[in-house]
Image 1 (cartoon, helix red, strand yellow):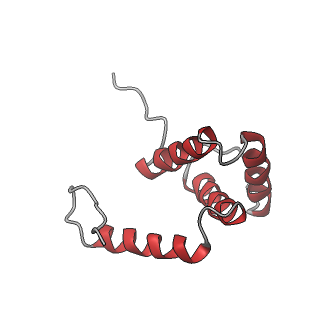
Image 2: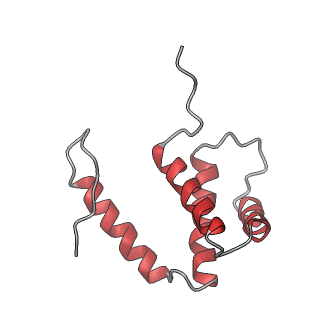
Length: 104
C-alpha cells in the first residue's frame, strides 16, 4: 500500500523546501520565521487544527513573501512579477506537462 503524501499539493512541498533552504542558507533564523508564521495564522483566524492544507500554506506563503520583503531579499513588486510569470506559464502549459518559466 502506498503511504499518504506528506503534502497535499506539490507547491506545498516546494514552499516548505524553499523556506528551509533560505533558513539553512542563513537568511533568517527558524525562531524568527516561526514567530512571524504564528502571527500570520492568528491574523488569518486559523485557530482550528490545521492539517497542512490550502489555508495553512496560503498563510505560509503570505508570511514568506512579507518576510522576504522585510529582510530585503524580494520586494513585493518582484514577487508579483514572478507570480504573474508562473501563472502565465501554468495557464499556457498543456495538462500533464511540466510547467516551466520562459527564459528572459
